[in-house]
Length: 123
Image: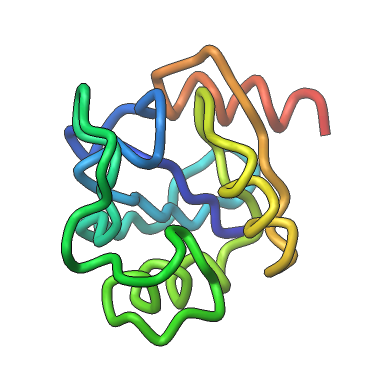
């Protein structure tokens, strides 16, 4: 199973995908991490206090069908995961995850291994 989450440091679950430096994809078997990949977040559009979109986002943000290279790169990564975990995200991001068939889990946990133990205990 592949699980993706936003991160500022490549280790912990960050609060919001639009403010994260990285998107981390881990391959897990139950609660054991088998592989970890760290990708630069190509659509960081929520810098603190920023209301305008960066110049590289000429189309609607977080669009999984976009041909904008920055957006396409992110959604090509997320299309191949089984679950996206974050502390919070906007309605547009939620709808786009649903569009590509990736379930969303909102968590208060910042530690990935603790999240995995709790998640797989419930499954």
